Length: 100
Image (cartoon, rainbow, N blue to C red; front, side):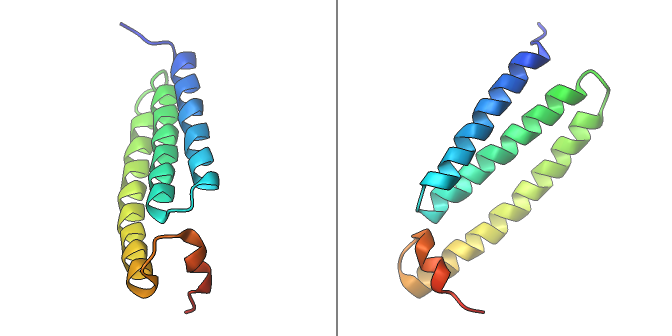
């Protein structure tokens, strides 16, 4: 069963829009990071769908995006822990007062 690439691209666009909406609207840093992960998964899905007709290019890009997502999660978790330790809140606006 083959799914047309156009349908997969539509799903990727919906995921990207959902993630972008979450990044813009949310104030909790954990939800913002989750929205960023949704956006990265949408990009990975688009690369795999686009690269399926041309060979392994999409899968290689997916592995690069997966590596980037793992690094983003570790940096994001460190940021969340530091933000909560200093300000006892996970509100994004509290990060504006951080210096250093």
